[in-house]
Length: 422
Image (cartoon, rainbow, N blue to C red; front, side, top):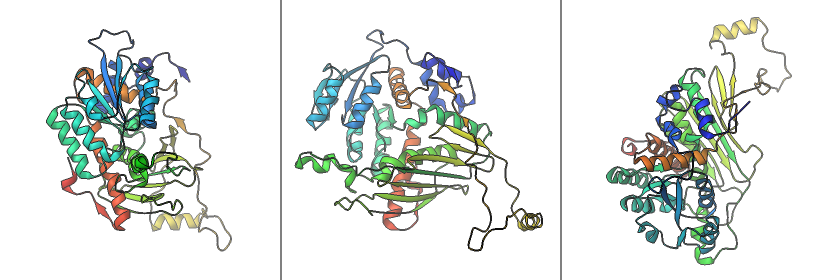
C-alpha cells in the first residue's frame, strides 16, 4: 500500500487527473478535482462565499467537510429550528451570520453558492428560489419528492444558467470511479445483475422536540413529505445502478410495508424493489429499519467478475460453461454433481466467499468522497461552469427511487415514461 501526502498526488496516482487514464474522458467531472487550490491563503477574489440552508445532522456534517475545502468562506447559515442553528454557528466559531428564514439568507449579495440540506419536500421550493436569486446550488439527495418537482428544478437550472449539483457523493468516491473504469475498460465483462441491501436498526424518529415542529422535524415518518427508505437510502443506489449499467430502467416492481414501527408513521419500514433495464439486466434493492447485521452492501455481478463497491473489492472468476441440455448431460455423465440427501438442494452450489478480492484503490489515505464532492462544487462556482452529467445522474436516480415507491404503493409494475425524461 502506497502512502500519499496530498489529495492531488493521490488523485493523479490512481488515474483520475486529466489525461492520466480513460476515466478522465469517460467521466468528465472528475477533472475538476485536480484544479482545486491547495492552500487556504488565497486572495479575496479567489475565495468562494457559501451559505448553508438546513443545519441539522446532515447540514452540520457538510459544514465540517466544507471547512476542509481550500478557498471557502462560510458566511451564512439558516434553519427554522434554533437549536440546530446555534450548534452549527458554533462550528464556525460564530463567524457566520445566522437566519431563521432561508429567504433572508438568499438576499445576501456576497453569497456565491448555497448548500440546501433541508427535508426533501421543500428541496424544489428552496433550490428554485436560490437559483433565481443568482446562487449556485448543491442540494442534498434525493433531488425531490415527485418527478414533477425534480423536472422543475432541472428547468430552473437551465433557465438561470446557475450550477446545480445534487449530493450523490459516490460519484466522487474513488472506489466507485475505479470500479467504473474497470467496467468501461472491459476488465469486468458484462454486467448481468446488481443487488444491494441497506439495513439499519433505527426508528428514525426524533424525540423531545416541540409539538408544533413534530411533522417538520420527523419528516421521514410522513409519506406526504418523504418516500422514507426509497428517498433516503435507495436513491443513492439507483444512481449507482444507472451509472454502472449505463442506462435507465424500463420499469420497477416491488413490495413494502410497515411491519414493526407501528407508531403512526406512513412511510414503510422495509422495502424490496426490482428494476428491469432495457438490456435485460436487473437491479434488486432491499432495505429495512429493524436489523443492522448485513448493513450496506452493493454488489455488481457478471460471468467474469464481481465487485463489492462499498467495500472497494473486485473479484475475478472463471466464466461458467455455456448453458444448455448438452452441457447438463455432459455434467451428469462426468458425475459433476455430488450425491446429496433426499430433501436437500438439487446440486452443490459453488460459493466465492473464500476468494480474496483485489482492492479497487490500494493507496492511502483515501480522500473522503463528501469532501471531494464539495470541493468539486466550489471549483465549479469558481469557474462558473456546470459539472457535466452530475445533475442528469441525480435526476434519473431520483426518478427511479420515486417509481420504486409508486410500484410498492400500487402493487403493480410502474414504467419510466417518455414524459419523465430530460
